[in-house]
Amino acid sequence: MEEQLRFRYEVDGDNFTSAGEASVSVKKKLRQLGFAPEIIRRVSIAMYEGEINMVIHAHGGRADVVVSKDKIEITLDDDGPGIPNVELAMQEGFSTAPDNIRSLGFGAGMGLPNMKRYTDTMKIQTELGKGTKIIMTVNI
Amino acid sequence: MTVNEFAKVLELEQLNIADGDRKINGAYAGDLLSWVMGRTAGDNVWVTIMTNLNICAVASLADVACIVIADNAEVMKEVTDTAKNKNINLLRSPLPMYELCVNINKVI
Image (cartoon, rainbow over all chains, first blue to last red):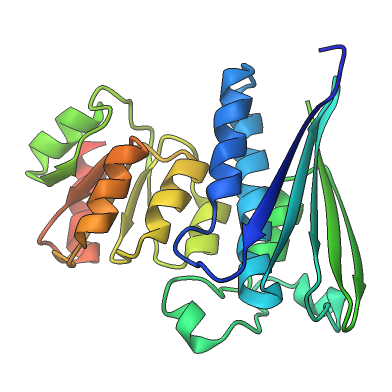
């Protein structure tokens, strides 16, 4: 693959039942491009967790996926409240999700840990009251 | 074992069969969606009592072979419709999760 492929998605913050559409779309595209199932699985899960986080905490946001020769980069960018304590948020089981979200099976405190687990690199830039930007890469 | 064989031997209700020939390579049980995504392996059977629409996205993204709803938990039409649209194998059993998992362990 000589050139980069770029995909951009707007993540709707009001529709919880459709959350994941961007991730499912990326999964389909990666499958069409012939990537190995485990690479697709890692990208899909990491991106889905990010999407869900944006819906739960930030009223939506934007997702950019860039496929290049040696890696897939996923950037999730929102205008939400920011993460007060990133170290705490990275701990498995820590969650600030409300009860109605937990009743749907989310809010297990595994979102950010899963994003880290399934990617090769993950950077979090967050500012209280401004938003959060997460950049993840999966090596091909 | 394929999903078709699995459904038949455990007498599971077939809410949607999208790919009955898909091979199964293990099983995972759980209801917390991120926990499931973090722990399940591709081509696993996923046993849960969670029946909201998000299970379809999780099954698709985590690439599980099939979802098995335990305890005859009610599944809304929009969930079976989405399973059809997203090519997800969706099965159901009247057994509680523990008994169902014990039986699954005997056949896979």
